[in-house]
Length: 271
Image (tube, helix red, strand yellow):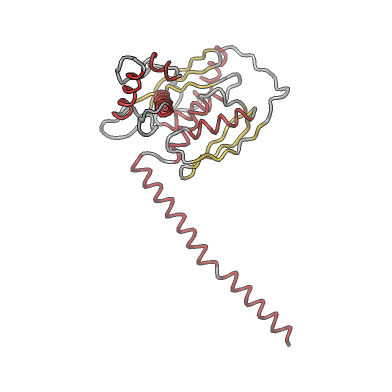
């Protein structure tokens, strides 16, 4: 009888333990859904969503020849970027994290990249002409990318033209970087940055260039405001102050001489 009571008590306790968390689990699921809805609503207001961050991160990664190795997967959740895939070295892994962290609106980076040395990997010997042909072939299979203009110089692919969105722009970089022999992808594609009045087209590469300039100004003690790739009044003022300190023409625009002083190359295409 005593053992029966113990058993009955244990069974009752077990049922209570199993049953009790159900409302808690339901509430937790509801909370998570509410958080996702709030983030989506906020993203709709600002235009900065996780998919936007993912696209910008991909464009930046595929455009950096330090990030060598296999294809890198990028995912973003609430501003936290996760990197997965394989790279050739610890330096490449560190460079990937650095590039991702520098993208505006990235809160943190979870670097799960695996380092796999190339070893006896066969060296790819392919001409720029063949690279261009293969990249064009890949892009032609996507209805949004078939009109993208492709050029290759020393294994560096240059993408030009107009695409519907930043996501399409990132996809183009990803497809191009996947071609054997490609060192990096310079993405100069334009896309509609926003809908409605005042929408305009800007090269994706130009935004990245402004971000680099803004970070360089910060490093030298000049405050350009947020590193958002936007050449606004605050950034222009910081640039003019820097130009004045270096006895350069105080134009407030990023030219070759100013870029050289900042330690960066300047492309004037698409301004």
